[in-house]
Image (tube, rainbow, N blue to C red; front, side, top):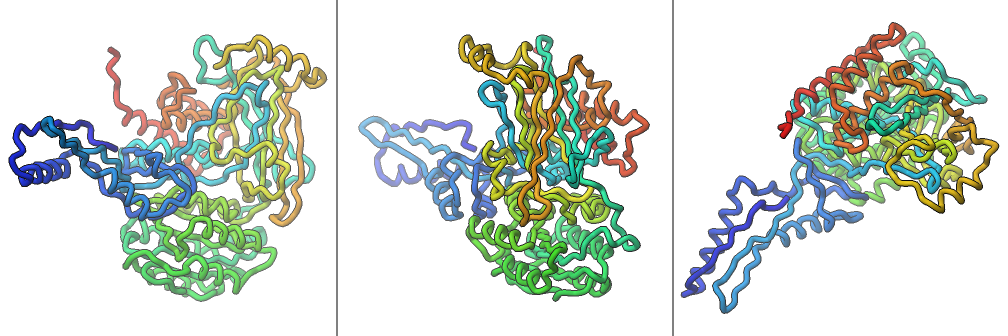
Length: 600
C-alpha cells in the first residue's frame, strides 16, 4: 500500500541547513498523521512462508510486494525492507529543492492467506490431462462464513472453492464401487450455468465417497480404532478472547466426552514456556481430562521452546500401531513452536507422518490467523485443517463427523482425468489450485496426496467446451488438424478417461482404478440434474463470485441462492443438520453486502 498522492514542496530560499531539517521533520510528521498512512508491519511477518501470500486486515486484501515474496523470508528481512522503503528521498541541486516522500509499502496487520490464481483454461489438444490430489479440508468455508456473519466480504484469497464444496455431505446415490476400493465413484455431466449467449459449455462432476461405517458412539465403539491423541494448545496472550481459547477449551471438552477407555489423551501447551498440562491419560477419565482442559489460561508471549517436538514425544510414548495416532494443534495462528525454520518444521511433520503420527490443525479467532501455514501443516501431516468459528462447527468436526475426521480409509488419493480431444476442445479445473500435481506425479508413490476419512465425500468440478462449440481460444489452422487426425478413433465415443490411485495404508503400494466417461448424446439441463450436483454447482458459483472470477460472466449471489433452493426442493435431499440451509443464508448475506453499481 503506498501513499495515494505526493506533494512537491519548492523551497525558494535555503538560507541555513536548519530550515531544510525543519521542513523534512514537518513532512515526516505530516505523513505519519495522514489518514492514508499505512499500518505498521505485523508481528505475524515473523512467520516464514514458502510461497506467495497476501496479508490482510479484513476486509482489505493486500498482496505482499515482490521483494517480500521469497522462500524463508525472515522477520528481520521484512522489517529492513519496510524501513528502506519508508525513507524520504530528496534532491538538492542548483535549482530549488524538490522533496519527495518515497512510496511506503508495509504489511498490514491481519490474517495470512496463500495467494491462489484460478486455474487456466486448457486447450485439450495441447494439454489433455488434469492431475490433482483430493482435498478434505473445510477451513475455508467456515472462515468465509465468519466474515459474512460479521458483515464483511471475505478476502478473495480466503476462498478455496474445493473446501467450500467439500464442506457438505453428499448422497452419491448414482455411484459405483470399483473393485475392492473403500469408496464409491460418481460422475455426471450437465449444462454450465455461466455461459454467454454464444456459448454451450458443460460441467463435469467427478466425486468419490468413502464407505460409511456406522456412526461412532459410545455404544457402537468398534467402528473407530483406538485413538492416541495429543492436544497441542496455544495459550499465549493473544488467545485470551471468547472466540479463541474459550472456544478452544469448549471444543476439547466436547471431544473429551467422545473418548473411550481404549483411547489415550495428552495435553501440551505453549506460550512463554512449554509444558505437559496432562500426561497420557485413559480416555474414560473424562473428569480428569476436562479438569486439565478447564485449567488452561492464556498469558505471556508465544515462544514455546520445542513445543511441537514435545507433542511428538508424548504421542510416541503411547504410540498405538494400527490405530489412530494424531496431534491436534489448536491456535489462533502463531507458529512459534520452538522451530524457526519452515522447512525444518514441515520435515518434522513429514517424518512423524511416515512413522504413523498424523497432525491436524484447528484455527480460532481472527486478526493473526495464519491460514496458509495451518493448511500446509495439516496437508503434510496427513491430517485435516478446520476453522472453528462456533461450538456448532466444533460439534460438526469432532462429533457428527468424528469418523471422517480421524478414521482414514484411503491414503494418498490422487485423481487423473484425460480428456478426449475429439469430444472436448477446452477444459478448466474449478478450485484445487494448490492441489494440482504434475502428470508424472500420479504414478509416483513417493508424492504425497490427500487422505480420505470414513464416510467423507470429495467432489471436483470441471468446466468443458465440447468439440465444435465456441471456446475462449480461436482454432489453429495447422496444429489442430495434425493432432486430431492422429487421435485414437476407437475411443472417440468417450469424453474422457478417469483414473484414481490410493493406498489402503500409508505404507502400502498404491492401487489403480480406471473408468471411461461416456459422452452425453443430448444436453442435460442443470435444472434436471441430481440435487447434489445442483448444490455443488451453486457452491462453486458462489465461491467464484466471491473471488470475482471472470469465468462465470454475469452470475450473481442471488443466482446461487436460487439454484441452492432448487436443489433443496427435492424430497430426497437430507438436510437434517441444516448445513445447506445455512449456505443459502450466506448467499443472501453476500447479496445484501454487495454494493449496487450505478448503471451509467
